[in-house]
Image 1 (cartoon, one colour):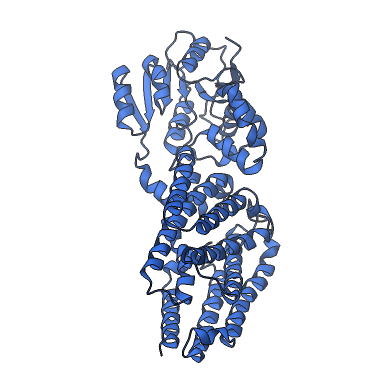
Image 2: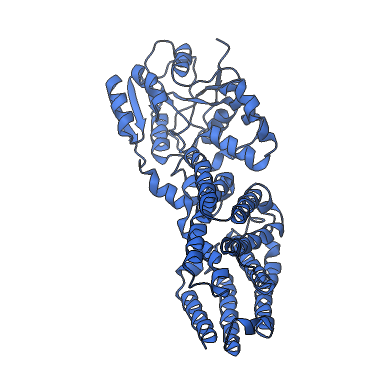
Length: 504
């Protein structure tokens, strides 16, 4: 067996004068308790560093990620080692489990020798040990050895001999270590895991995070964002085809297909934005960033959702709609991987994704979108995209230079405050020009009533920007509008005005 990585890290002393000195492996501890061995992935932290490294590589260097199959062919240990060399994780902001940390600190203060024993790569394990300053030794995987399950037990025996040890773990891979440990501490509440552990030892709970992943995953899918797909019905409404049942059904199917695709993209976006989200005052509570839902669960849900969206569109909608859905997914992925970090490109991309829904809705029912509607949509959605970025930048701490993972700095606030409302007012100007055009006479019997829509839209846009200036706007204006009674009132008023203008 090639040489295993076993680094001894000196434990820094805090202000507590009763804290013990760093353990010396050559001396005998006064406390007769055996060493406490602590697993890392899923145990000390509520995530997996292999997946975290993989996602960070895809997010920051997507072309390098094409080498992943070649690295995996040389073994999982080699894959972990290459990922640890290619990316630098922010160890300080990982979702550490407070119960496990508290127990380790308590045992450390009692004078016990603490070992970090993990299948993660040595570089990452050593970084965690240096960050926490709680461990005497680090036993981790290297380029040739993947310390998981029995391999970890053999390495631990080589290090400790046949002496006793206590072990904290969280998965079935830890069963061999629990079987040979003096005391087996289990992180998790899986009944199946507890039954298997109970056959081998007497497991003791140390942290019991909820087994209910469904609520967290559902939150990550952001079903409330499906409301944005109402834009698919705009061509149906403005072309006065609401009475055609077949067109209504087509829009309903398109709504579900876009919803599935959008939820998959939200998963991708959150998975690739973990570090930025963990440093955001509100996004740090998202399911993946907080560790409530394992990142691998989200990653494995993406492909099935995209396949379901494609099959639904292929089976029930025109080929043109499938193409629009493909463009939406492609552009959304490009946004998640690259474009969201590019100044101005990101806001234009967001506005384009909104407008793309309108175009897709038109293709689904076979109508042509007028240039007036496209121009109005682009200016309005550009204003809302500016709202999103402005609120993010404004919510960040004053000491921070800008929004992490974005191409903006604090000094851009004034520019946002100028360009955002202006874009919204240009949308109203397009609406005014449309009311004065000959096209409006073809669809409305009382086009003069449409002028009443303009002050309503002006009021709504202006109010949005007042609220974001007052820190009363979340980072997503669409989510805000879905909970805002004034927005519902404005929408209802516009609907009444348009209905009155339409009837003869």
